[in-house]
Figure 1: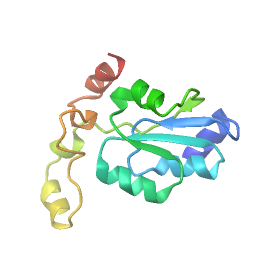
Figure 2: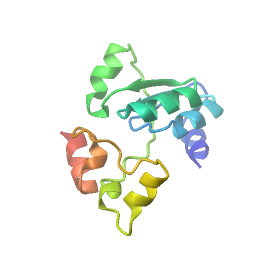
Figure 3: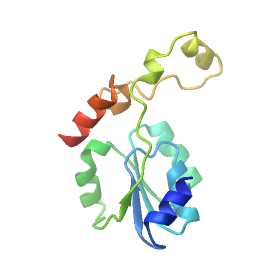
Figure 4: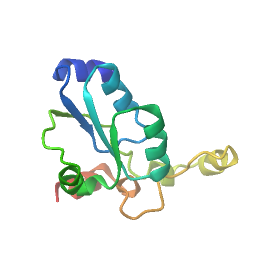
Amino acid sequence: MISNFISFFTKSGQSVIDPFAGIGTTLVARQRTKRKGIGIELNKKYFKIAKVRTNQKIFNGNSLELDDILTKNKIKNIDFCLTSPPYCNVFNRSTGGFTNQRAEKTLDYNYSNQDTHIGNLDTYDDILDMLVH
């Protein structure tokens, strides 16, 4: 589905950014559709996974510092933005033994312990407020 959106809204060779890159799923779709992908991921573990999955540009940083990251890396033109933003603090609010089940399988049960990670905010409105300020 991601490839379909990219193909519909952009042309081959154009730049598509994902400010919440995670493990790089949308960057892989950009690569498949012959677009230039740019990703930003705050969580170092997910950043490293994305680096292995794709040869697209990905930066380990905070998307709230997007302008600085793009300027520092001399990226001037972005044609399209496509992302799957963090799902608020869904990991932290989960019930029914979710945390214990994931911990037993050595899977992550929160986005990060960083206060600057917008995935730790309580509501989608909180995320939007942080992004526009």
